[in-house]
Image (tube, rainbow, N blue to C red; front, top):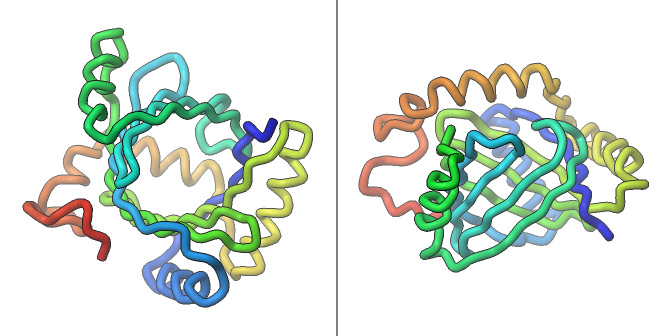
Length: 193
């Protein structure tokens, strides 16, 4: 069963983001453009909920955050259930620890899931991802690293991701305030720019 998410990611500049967006629009199949709100919970596992255009989901990821491969389990709900999911998890003793707000552009690049994300208060990121069986996780990660280099993008170290993640966790309320750079107060979060 392909339940292992193999992925590589990197922070990119505004110029790199624009170049990559142009490349993938010309050389891959567009999958979707989406606005996503993701909440992480203070729990003994990586526990999250997300609301996007499709609906709402509850999901867990095994292993350490920013690892190259992790087991992932998702359960989908109606979009209107998002608030109830947060209330349920909070009432079970898992307080909401951090919230993320991002615009995502997703492509299928020859069987590789490509996500170009612009996350308010955090930055622009490219992710290359492929689901695989556990026995092929390392091989799949190495293939994705080669593909990233083909795109002329250097991988951001796990230490840098950990550092930026910890900074965001401590400061997300300020970083995502209405005066932030990505979304304006009153702007429709369902609209993709």
